[in-house]
Length: 159
Image 1 (cartoon, rainbow, N blue to C red):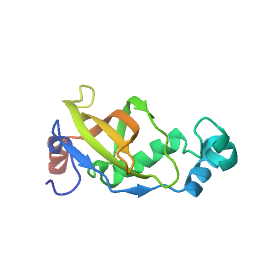
Image 2: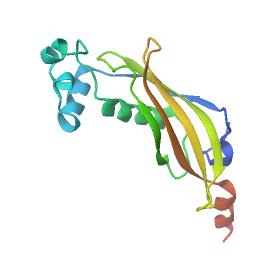
Image 3: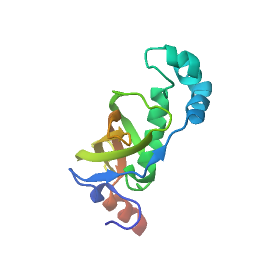
């Protein structure tokens, strides 16, 4: 395994990473919703129970934020200069997150290519699947990271 933060050359197509587990509680769902997505199915258990989901659920944006946390704590390795994203290609929430769910993220490297506009960097495209303790997918995301290349950083260190 690579020591220190990963650089472009440390990734390989097909490589997989797995995050630690994270339990989500009703209080966290309500707190996130109160600040960022104040809808009844995220904040009011009685209203949520009467709604289409049959109970309190996390906002999809909360699921995305939790996924980001899991990516940065093991779903991806530590990356030199941080996990700088070039964009999200797709983001799907096939099932809602509910209080008590225990989430984890698995990531697979799909594609790599040197950046044409910034030769000191490479682009690493990946798919991240966020799943519950019952292996039910709650989020699927395909995204691209901008990752520094080793040769560029070694050349800069010699100057």
